[in-house]
Every structure is written in C-alpha cells, then in structure tokens.
Amino acid sequence: MGQSRFRPSPELVIALLALFFALGGIGYAAATIGTSDIKNGAVTEEKLHDNAVTSVKIAPGQVQSTDLADDAVNSSKVKNGSLLGGDLAPGVLPRRAVSIDTVVPASSTVTLKTVDGLDAAATCDPSGHDTLSLKPTGTTSTADLSGTESGGSTLAPLNLEGGNGASVLSALPLDIDVIARNSAATSSFARFDLHLGSPSGPSNSCRAWGVIAPSG
Image (cartoon, rainbow, N blue to C red):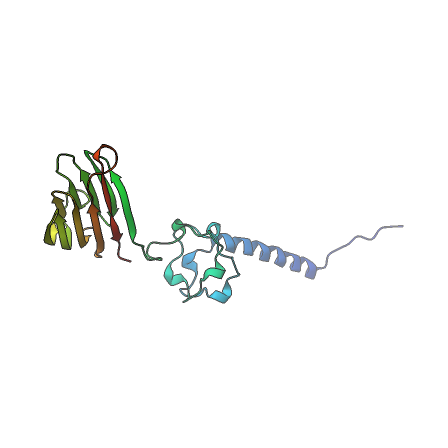
C-alpha cells in the first residue's frame, strides 16, 4: 500500500514564512532601536511593565529627559538598584551637595574636591603657613566669585571677576564661603563653604571640612 505524502498548501507556506519574518523582525527591532528612534515623550508610564527597566536594557547615557513623558518613570517601574550613574545622560538628575571631612597631613597639600574646573585645596603647615584655596584648574585667570574669607579672627569680603581664585593664608582656623565658577568651564555657579581647622591627631595634622553644592 503506498504511503501518502504531506504536501503543504501555498497558503500554509506563506503563513509559515510570514511567522518566521515576524519573529525575526522582533529580534531585529529589539537589537537596533535606540533613543533617537523614539519620539520625545512617547514612552509613558502605562507602556512600561513593572520592573521592566534595568541597567542591562539601557546603553550608557542613552536616556534623555526629553525621551520620557512627564511622570513616566516612577519607583514601581524600576528594579531596585538596577540603574547606574552611567545609564543616565548628564543633566537628567540634579547634582547633590558634597560633604567634605578629611584629615590633611602635616606639611602637605590635599585637593579636597574639583568641581566644574575649580580646585578646592588645603595645606597644613606646622610652621603656621596653613592655606585654604579655591582656584581654576590649571593656570587660567577665569574665576568669578563672591563671598567672604577669614583667617584667625579676621573676616574679609571676596569679590572677583576673571581672576586667579581665592587663597587665604593665616593662623587657623581658615574659612572660605563663596559662590564661584570657572567661566572657561561653565556658566553656572557652585557654592563652596570650606574650613581648615586647628592641628589635631598624629603629627599635627589639620582637619578640612565643609560643603560644596554644585548647580543642578
């Protein structure tokens, strides 16, 4: 007895080919769609499954604030601990104030923090030449600042436009409290409230502390 052979109909062949290309298209789209392919504000909250957004799903720096509709991303849509700083483009999140509390060894200079092209530094000198400074990175004369400085019991105003920055050298304690910018690096000002305290701890080291609040 002869065996019958299955012969797919043209309609079945077309349907299978359509399914194959459809599945392949999904994989292609998932691998190639980037932020420039998404209309600004098109991704809304209801389009995202809970915990759908994780670090591995986003190329570093791809998410721009204009890509998201208002209130699209909330806590329930993002897996805890999944987003890293490199996943977000600059400016998406406001910058936070930085707290400083560090020991400056005797006879040494320590850079406390560099913010937007401004170097905050402290020198602890047992001979009495302690210094607290805020200067543009490098040798540029592009510092704009306004506020006060003090050394010991002397308080003095600080107002400078296009200069080399501020530096106070005097008996401890030292203090610089200003808003400042390096105009060659940014148009925005940051707040610097810095202090250098009396020698303490091993080998007459000094203590530097304060707060730096960058602009958002």
